[in-house]
Image (cartoon, rainbow, N blue to C red; front, side):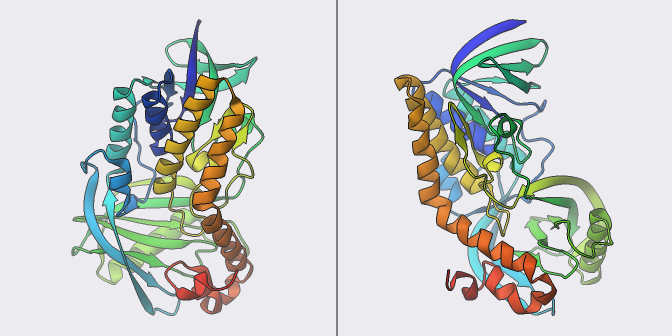
Length: 352
């Protein structure tokens, strides 16, 4: 067993963690980032869409971009279609994650792969990889996903999670819009078809709820059959995965010298589930404030991180939380409430 000390320990090398590690290192902090996977970004558990502005925010080239998207089409339960122009890109999420991690390493962060942070005892984090390593850090950043172990350490456990399944399929013809499908069977969630050149990500997110009789995997098979029947995709599945999407933020992402960021903090949009952009942006804020707090030996500076993230995303998240409550409560009246509860409609933004 060995012992190591650093200014900032980042747990998780996704967009939030790598963004935090990069900025902390650029601001003079001694940074270690641990990642439990053997390969950063793999397996991919993401629908892989980003808004058009995010590559400029990342500022690390465009290698990860696969396909330009003009906007979003929403298919309502009655079959009617609503189109919203909102440019963006579908991406290779593994390439994005690896790009961000390389930038963190280039800035001076040390990355330990195949390493699980298992416990926090007496101010030291136990990290298991080839051996057990005890790491003491002035600041700990939990960027370890929606079922965050770091979150459990500080009593900030997000229990409002949506299970999702997704398959990679071949498209029958190119698409330049993402497609969202609402159906009574997709309780609290939706189906999606996100084009990636000649292929597409096809998935469903659905909460546990009343009168659920069909498994999520079976529901995905039905959805794929529907898209095959309408001529969107070929029937052969290329690969499949499952994951969790936060549907609400944690109440407080900061406690003492520990902060949460990205999915660990529930910084995804509670209605759409979009999380890459806030993960990158809040990760950068977390890295800066962590470096400042470590340098000044003043953990109260971490509260600036929470305040800045609230300023940027708090109102958006609060509206979405309220809309989600309405959506789930009135799911049996989905046709009547959907325009109030989905981001592509003006009614979503009306009122409180």
